Image: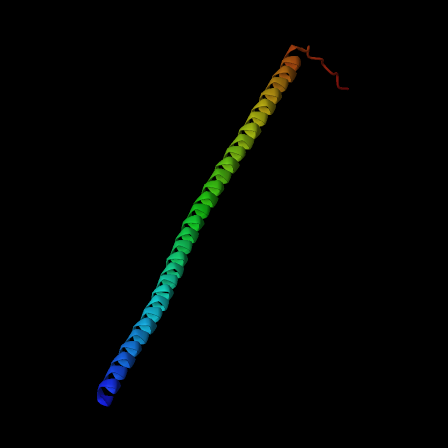
Length: 119
């Protein structure tokens, strides 16, 4: 009878230890799973942020290149316009000088020649 009691007591103790071990394993697996999920979330978040950063940087650099190209084209247009204005001013001055020179020569041709007597 005593051995039966000790056997029964040991069986119950064994079952309780087994249940405690299962409970401890369950808690640890939950902890490990949450840690793994958190690490994966942090990794995925870091990867997404890195991808967004690279994309935004590329877009910004492309915008800067576009603005620089537009500025260069505008500067070239202004330089070309300034050169056109300079050529136009030169042409006007040349026309005026030519007209004025022709008028002065016409005056010289139409003026009667005066003879100067030398003694």
